Amino acid sequence: MAHKAFVSSTFEDLKDHRAHVIAALRRAGIMVDPMEDWTAATDEPKQFSQDRMKDCDLCVLLIGWRRGHVPEGETQSITQLEHHAALEHGLDVLVFMLKEDAAWPRKFDELDKDPEVRAWRASFTEHKGVGFFDNQPGSIEIAPALTRWVAEKGRQEREVLSTPQTEKDAEWLKTQCDRIRQAFSRRMSGSEAKNVEAASGAYIERLVRKRGSSTEPGQPFSELAGPESDCWVVFGDAGSGKSAALLKLAIDAGERAVQDYNAPIPFVVQLNFFDTGERVLDRLIDILAIEAAIDPGAIAGLWRDAKRPLLFLMDGFNEIRGEFQNDCLRALEELLRVGPHRIIITSRPNVAIESWIDSRSDIRAVEMVDLNEDQIQEYLVHSRASSLFGRMGDELKELSRNPFMLWALAQSCADLAAGELPRNKGQLYLKLLDSHIFGERGAKLRNSLRRLAIIII
Image 1 (spheres, rainbow, N blue to C red):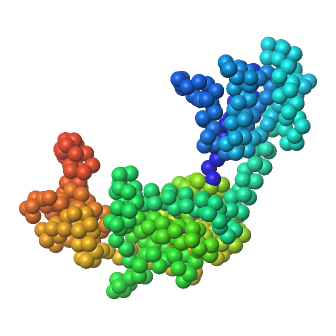
Image 2: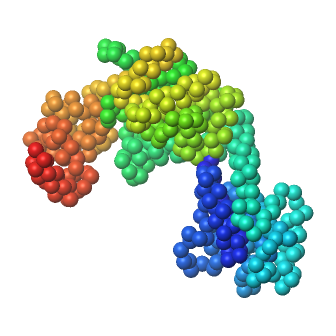
Image 3: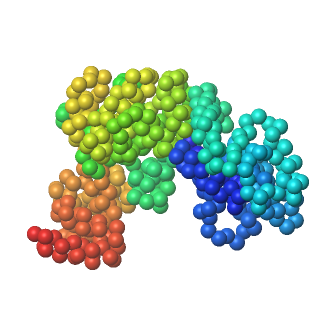
């Protein structure tokens, strides 16, 4: 899971020490929203700071020789109240205290002035696991503590996902399914507006066939998640529906995984984020973890343990920068060494991945099948543009075999007479620009683009 931490301490005396901790947290990939970045708020400071930790997983508590400000009507300082709030919210707490013999500025020493400081500090020294620091910020050994904490969180998440599920154990999977549904909804509608049910209703089951076999009728894309092969590569041109089909498959697989412990857990990743030639498998797992909001160690553990199958759904291989494509293929080869996991990769035609397929016997290559007339009319009916098909000429009907082009037609041409319909792809794009994307401003932008094209030519 992508973790978030709260740093609690007094401020003026521990300013530099806080900066050291915050930097270490961010280097570890842990989100931090420190008070240094807060804007002015009308809320009472004690409530405002406590509210900030509600979505956190970890609290790092730094204790010097003062408690800090005690709000009116309270017996505890804001820092103490933050610590109690962290415990109430179930956060893990890493405690670091200033050493008793530290060379500390006298103006920040309230050990004798405020007896509660010693009592508060003593309450922590009774417990194991408290770290100590001196006047040097680097003396806070935060990195090893974070490493241990992240490893433990990964182990806990791994146990949740690797054991038969109770209702509580399945919570992450349900959250993962919700995340995938929202991504699918955005893909189908181009915005957040369409709800998941409407998006699913507008989806047409896509077919795939063996690459180069144009006479084959094809098989449903959803069947690629079956046990027939460890790895599929799905080719398709721009707008052919690869990404939407992959997300729909992920939704269905996720729902099965929630109900059936033996069903594979789906992980969706956008491969365009792959950007390294070193530690390639680690980078691929990191990207998977970010998209799934889970600790990379949890995914790596699930993959290595192989107690439950994983379904890796990897979109857009062709969008990886050219210099890193072979490195990503090396990562995929490592991923394939451990079973019983499955991989589905989508890509536009691409030399690197095609050569990779040719060099292996365990990978099956298929291609997206264009929509047929029945599917086109089914989509137009769902889009409340059922009469449009009868007004379309042969060229528009051919264009509409591509799902993106069909969507563009339904969005921009549903109410147009036959004579007003676009006659080619360029005119369709202009119609979409005018009516759907920019509205009234679309015509002005279109004219500007045409003038620019004339100048360039």
